[in-house]
Length: 193
Image 1: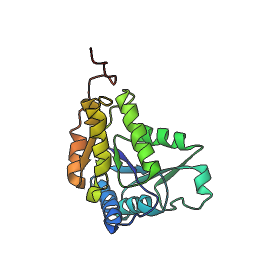
Image 2: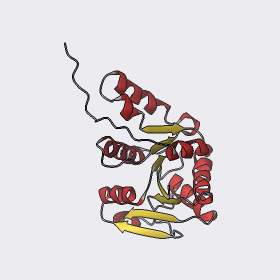
Image 3: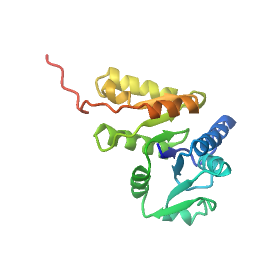
Image 4: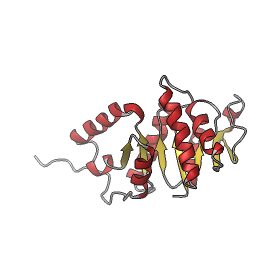
């Protein structure tokens, strides 16, 4: 993996460990010569992951919709800042630039980005590893929901297993490097009565 996209909050959240781990992820990627692709902001966990990578001499590419630049949240110290027209174009560009995805804690935007990447993978549009750094159990409830979707016949086990999860950075990166995408189709057959 040469580049990893990180999706995360533009806020810091209530637990200091989110910021610490975001910064550490950026540093770890830089130390492993993996370039960081992210949303281009200087605020919240987004700023922390970028600063972590930059402080270790890493390459950081931000992808920011032009309308957010006017809100003065664009990070000024990036290796490269790519301006796009829309949020959808941002996700498409971030996908085009990366070899895998990691989600850190975040809100609606982080979940939307994560699930769009998962949907694209489920449909066979890419075969990249998609991972969650489950800091302090932040994503436990979401992982329970994915299991419920599977138990209720709305999500294949193979597709649920596309979500790589760990609470440590090194373990998560190792899972991403060893990832094999599912070979089964998305659709679940209706049970015969």
